[in-house]
Image 1 (cartoon, protein in one colour):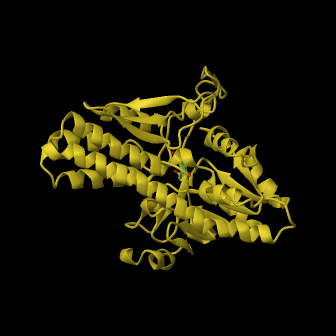
Image 2 (spheres, protein in one colour):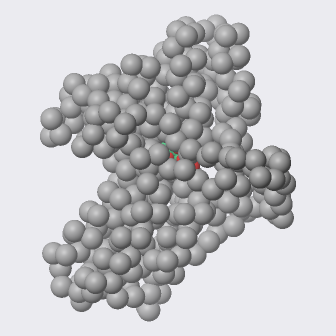
Image 3 (spheres, rainbow, N blue to C red):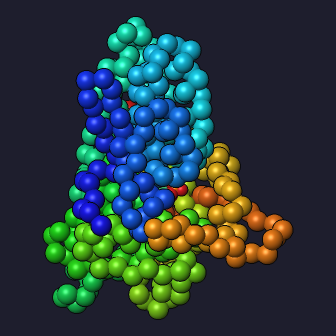
Length: 362
Ligand code: MRU
């Protein structure tokens, strides 16, 4: 397999047009396939089928989708059609609708002839800002791991439990929850990651393990049901996850299976942190359980398992006709969260904590 590119998504231009390139996450870990988005419909398909996934990355892909729409037809009517479909491609992560809406509002300030160039510049700046944000989250989160390392005998690793993939692949680069892990590892703080496999799409086993392996970070894949067991045996020091949408009160919505980890962490007096870039905060809501739309995905993701080899075989595991339910996210109420690691620092999971770091949102 060739060396992966540094970014999960990037653009390539010639005189005539710009094409968006991305790592196709439906093909990992079997093979590294670079996909191409040439139309906004391509971007829409890539988001819906999770070739690109993770809250920050689908936000950036949505913005690139608007760029591609403007490249084809920069009229108000054409952009409105593309935006309406793209922003609905996945409902839970606040980033997607936020970036699509923000870019379309920005383009409305310019005549159609200028829109394509403005859109690409705006989206490239969004992608750069995502990278900077994630590095800052890393700088603020690493001391938490270093502090845990100091409480252990020399050389004994800090055991971080993570869920899903809030890594490089979920962002433009570096990841959110993985960023403190990568920085700690680079600083030679001994760290080991428990990677919760993340049924049904297996983002932990397929994607997080893939990128940790490439960075040389020691890790072990476990089934989702093993997490509380490992906590009970004293084999977890901290839980660190990402978020798709965090409310202004600090409720954290993330991949299905995050909430049970928070409950188990509470029962075992373990810290539970979420890495929260401000672009994933929905300042318009407080009550995550009742106000965040939870995506329900196709039944076959649960009733079948998919192989990871070059031939992506699927095998049915539930009897034909069995009823299936597939909610893709859950909400961890703020009282189960120890802290939120943002690009401006770590705060308590509350409105006061978040607006203390982001006073402009108070
Ligand atoms: O369904 P997915 O794979 O897009 O879900 C992704 C997650 O739940 C991530 O933890 C979240 O988007 C944070 S990514 C930095």
